[in-house]
Amino acid sequence: MNTKYLLFLVLVPILLSFSINQKSKSGVPKNGPIEVSVTLRINKIYNINSVNETYQIDGYLIYSWVDERAKFNPNDSLSNSIIYENEKSREFIKENVWIPAFELINVQGSGETPNTRIELYSDGTIELEERFFDTFSSDMDYTKFPFDSQNYKVEIEAFSYGKGQIVFKNPKLFLEDDHQEYLGEDWTFIDSNTSVSTKNYRYMDEDVDSEKNHYSRVSFEVNAKRLSGYYEWQVLFPLLIIILASFAIFWIEEFSTQIGVGFTLMLTVVASIFIQLLSYPNFLIIPL
View (cartoon, rainbow, N blue to C red):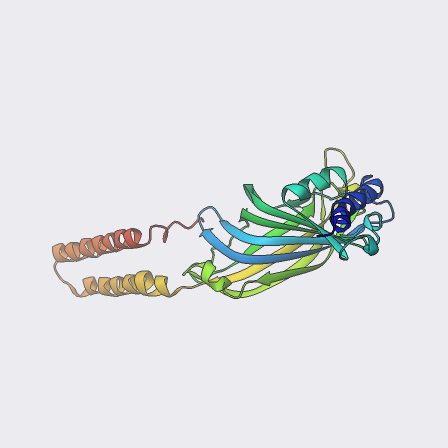
């Protein structure tokens, strides 16, 4: 390979990084709020825990925005974009380009982000992509159990930038074609939706209407319905038979026999519950 070409491959990224470093290191732009487009790609929703009201998600988050200071001359590069991955992307963020921190609002604990990718385009577009494995939580309504439907949410805000500096727009949600397999045997997918709203916070004696207390929030929702067949045939139907059998007491004349039949039916209910717990340990552990 030509020595000059090798030298070109080595020097171009360095020169581009130096150029971007001089323009983008100063922090959030001052010419109005940055519009951030968010895309969530869900590979699977799994380990749905009705007791703790939690669920785990494996997916990708892709943030995209335009920063005029990150522009570069495409003639100085082999393509119209430059890609940094994992450790290189983290080092690049520290020294060269302004990347806002985004916060998963309803996440539980600390998850995993095994892969990070930054792509810079010559027109100043910056794309941040993160692969994540996290545990999330949201309020679940069991008033119609076992015929209930639940919403699995992912909510995102900028960590330290209010609505005057960062606003979300055009959120997109994509589910893998085989996502139904990962909801488990108890759930079936209904639909999904996205929304952008404003969250108002109040700190101590600050004015709640202060602009710095307004944060743009993007929400992704996957709606799923519980499959009730198990509960209908294994729980409700046997209980219905036992309840109907209990009416036989009114046609029994001897009191001792009535008591015996009543206790037998009660023990049958208890035995039925134990059998269900052995085959499906969590079927009765539903928060009130």
